[in-house]
Image (spheres, rainbow over the protein chains, first blue to last red):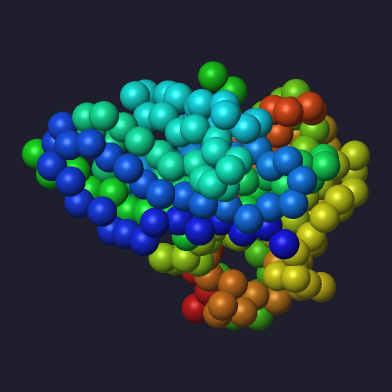
Length: 113
Length: 113
């Protein structure tokens, strides 16, 4: 079945540091890939997505590239801010009309001023 | 911006009692979902609903669970006889037809005592 393996947390960085959160996946077919973010006390918000190989999703300074050859979708940001502190979830949908989301375990990110 | 709305935000119930969690999906969406997140764990798929019937359910979604779309706007999750292990955050989500992204509500935190 489909699965998502995500970098273990928690991750603590200083403001303006470079961020990478690793995500790899296992899926049959042609999955779409997503990053969701959960701010403290809030629900899940879609951060970015990519629907086919070599696509780059981007939003709010975050980027992730769909790499079919390495089955990866790593999240990056060049300069993090305190407001980026949240839990980040990598997820996929299976394709073939199967649009349920399979999530990774989540990575808690804390940014220190 | 349209959003998925869930009520209540927090529900406390006694073990063995029935609970109904309510959701109003985004108005032009046709696919509806429930997910849950046990504290500190990953987000798990429960059930998907389309065209007034369940299209897929996970092994978590046993006979104690049911979903309903009683009118044109609401989507409910009923747990018939709650157990302590049902304590979790329950997220409703909806998606437009085609390759639209899945949007989540803020969640209902269910505490079974």
